[in-house]
Amino acid sequence: MANYAEMWKDLGMDLEAHDALCAVLPTAFGDVYLSQENRPEGMGFWDMVVADIHGIRPAELIEAQKKGQKVFGTFCVYVPDEVVIAADGIVTGLCGGSQFWVPGGEKVLPKSTCPLIKASVGARLERTCPFFRIADMYVGETTCDGKKKAWEILGQDVPMHIMDMPQMKRPQDVKKWEDEIKAFAHVVEEFTGNQITPEKLGDAIHIINEKRKALARLYEARKAKNIPISGRDALLVMQIAFFDDPVRCAQMTNKLADELEQRIADGVSVFPAGTKRILLSGTPMAIPNWKLHQIIETSGAAVVCEENCTGTRYFENLVDETKNTLEEQYAAIAQRYMGVNCACFTPNTGRVDDILRLAKEYDVDGVIDVNLKFCCLYDTEGYTVEKALKDAGIPVLGLETDYTDADAEQLRTRIQAFVEML
Ligand code: BJ8
Image (cartoon, rainbow, N blue to C red; front, side, top):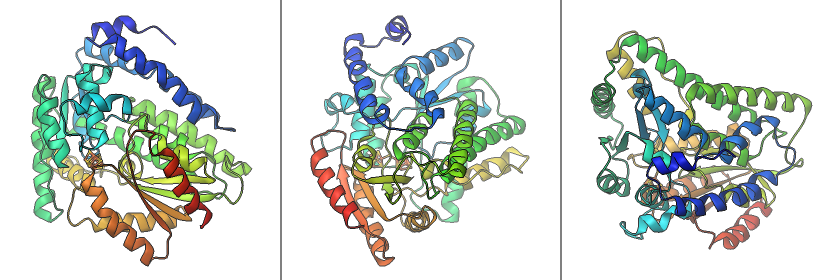
């Protein structure tokens, strides 16, 4: 591993606390990832990225900043990367997925806040995540109440732009989202000093669509009877996709997909025949939250799909590439993003339709619907999701968890019992 101590120091990070984080990550990664057998060779790229997760990509971002590019940190899949890329900006995800950061968040937020928000705020305030230090601007959104209030704290010493999300999906709401995207584009242009032209926006739309198509290929491979990649590995690819350069992400994922397609042709599987297939639905799993996948896949089942924002919600549906004017392009972008079905919308029947569709497409034996503790949106929607699945005759298990290991054994017992009855 290269030595990035100087870089972290220059970023104003708390080196001692950061060392403590760096000390636990390799063990966690080894336990969850390197212990697996017969992994696709292509995963070597992601193993390398994780081994230096606070080094390689941050160093690239700093280099880009030296050349005048701006880095935008985002927290939600509704924020359109296309707009930033069209102005020669760079997007990096900022959602926190480690318990390590939660106590820092709890110093300023109510304990009864979802761990994703607490970890994100903790990572910023405790100065232990280089991505939070590097981002020139944070982009928040008015999705859930916890996030809305967290922006007021996170934005105290970093420029913060907040996108006002509609709460419904009527035609006037989609129009409102289009206006919001245009307003964001204006902010991005001002901040970067670069004008967004139809050509540049068209190129950016294409880049992100190609990334989506590559991720969709990875997921397509998971539909096979002989499962060529574990859920853990697929999740890792998704998690890193939020940080990586989008062109490289597409290249590496396509390469991995080539290998997976070959594995399918050769009848290679990472699970024994007859392993139960699970669809995981619910709240996103930010890196390094591998907890549920690890428990499920060491309890006799395989995760074959994630209906969440570190899963299908991130890549399904493309932006229409046939539009030539900014006006039409922004409308096409708004259309695509309003096709994402997050529980922050009401009604949100599209999500139930998605889950039923995915259960069929991935030929699953059961669904595990999970929400992060204190996420009222997904917890409440769990009622509707579970009812729809039961009505369709698909076994479902509803779970609530956080980033700690405190409930790991209890979860394992429940998941094992669920898998046994499938
Ligand atoms: S589009 S899921 S990324 S808002 S932070 S809502 S878990 S209490 S993350 Fe999300 Fe965008 Fe929706 Fe996806 Fe609940 Fe926590 Fe809020 Fe969360």
